Image (cartoon, rainbow, N blue to C red; front, side, top):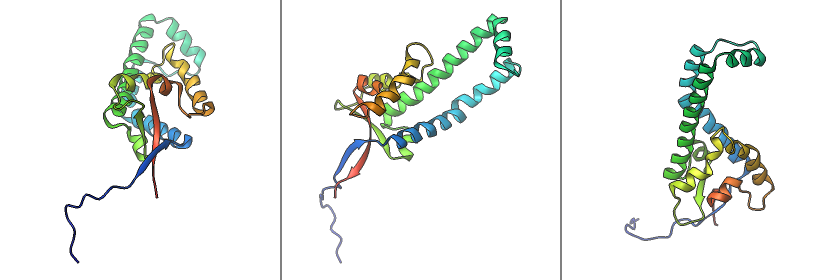
Length: 170
């Protein structure tokens, strides 16, 4: 049998549909695990060296309220960790249209425009910042995802992006 080389046969036809909710949640969980080990874990040892072990939240609050310089250090540390997490999601989505967690579940990010911009990627991932008003997206994004007809988060609508999975046409 002779192999036919150089044939320009069409590839498998695919279409992009909304990613299933459980896949999106699992992908986020996997990405958080990855971030926990790569970004947050190194900061954990710095926190343990800085802060004593607290037996309750009220004791921690009292301790921190009497040490303003420690409060400033914690705010700065939280800010730096948040920037690393934001960079992870933003750059992965922009450069590869996926993160490791999304890739494992075969879902990806698509832009409604021909090519995703870095600005779009940044805008869709601002939910990771634990500052006002972005932490409001922790409530608004899941609500929009579940109740909107397009099954998109609010930040996806604003950034003109969507999370999809690809299906083969038979």
